[in-house]
Image (cartoon, rainbow over all chains, first blue to last red; front, side, top):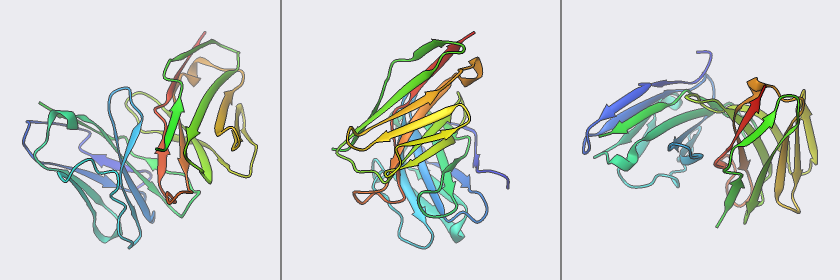
Length: 114
Length: 114
C-alpha cells in the first residue's frame, strides 16, 4: 500500500476483555514500531521490530501487552485483560532502512476501555 | 533518567510572524534529532532531521538548529500561516543504546491566527 494502515480505527471494549490491534506497514520496510498516545500527551514508545532481530520490548508497560510481527510484515499488538488506563490512541510506524531514516506513521487506533 | 522537554503551553502567534519552538533534553546524547507535525486525529508526519554534527538545517519556511552543548533544538517557521497550526513533536534517536528507537517529546501546539 501507499502508506501505513491500521485497523480498526476505533475500538471500544469492556474492562477485562482482550483486544488485538493490527498494523500493515509500508511494503518492504524492515522496521516497525508501536507507540501509545494518551490525550494531550506525547508518544510513548512500546515496542520495536527490526528485521529478524529480537524485538525491543523495553517500552511495554506490563505483561498484559504483547506484540508480534509475522513474516516481517504485518504486526499485531495484543492487550490482555484491558484496564481503563489502557485507553489511548495506539500508533504504528514503519521505516525502510536503518537510522537515520524517517518513520512513517499510520492513522492510529483509538482504544476506549469502559 | 533521560528526559525530553517541549513547551507544554500552546504557542499563539499572528500570521506572518516567525514561530519558534524549543526542544530540550537531558541525560541523552542523540545522534539525530527529528521534528514531526501532528494534526488532530492523525499520526505524526516527518518534517526535518538534523544530525549531531550539523548546526542548522533548512527546508522551505522551516529551520532547525541543534546545539549539542546546550542540549537544545530550536524549530522555526517563518512567515507563519494559519495552515501551520498543529502540534509539533521533537524526537531523538541514537546514542546510549537507543539506536533505531525514537524518543518523543510531548509536543507543543502552535496556533497561528489570521
